[in-house]
Length: 287
Image (cartoon, rainbow, N blue to C red; front, side, top):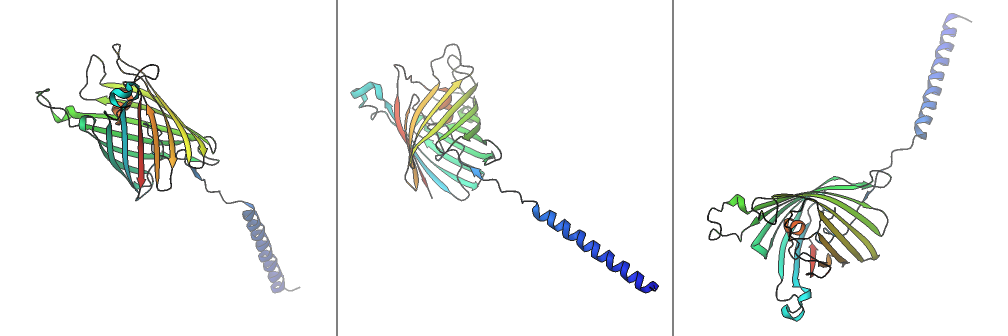
């Protein structure tokens, strides 16, 4: 065998060996399964549980029109026609800037309060992945009912109040979802005999699906550092979600008549055990 033939055989065997090695590598790569895409899970159908916010956000480009109504004290009976004589109304709109960020503006008749809101998703619950949904929520109230006749030194800053909320929810099954929400409240103007300028609240809520379009909701918010001369109560509400395709209709029974978050968490005046109870509804229409 001459030298050229030997070199040719050696080169051929080398090429065949490299090809077989590459083929084995490709087979190994083919056995590695691609990473499955995590599916995000929504715990709530409505943007609110009852009065509390849920972890649901408006999708990008969606407009939600909100109309909320709270009648007066049901326990007064015919004296106020079961609340019809003393009703509050809230009208607002929410816009989804992105799928993870929405902003809102509303006005309610009580104290003529304007409420600015921002809601943003931090993390979503995933199938076989992250166990909870985490959402941030901030509100700023502007009380336009305050008058210099009562407060001669009133400044614009005195009209403002804020909440900062962290909403954490989990969908445990097709029927049951739950949420916990630490809340910080700050008021620039407050009554020091019955209120605090800063207050912490721990809110909890849940949703149980009864049928495809019907669910019952419950929420409770415990005030951590209520003042000694306390005239307000912890928030307790029960509601019913009715899904009708284009909108969510929520019936609400609560010990709080107001609908802005600052008052909802810190100024609930009613009691379920022998106190005032307020009936109302939230209507969301999406465009």
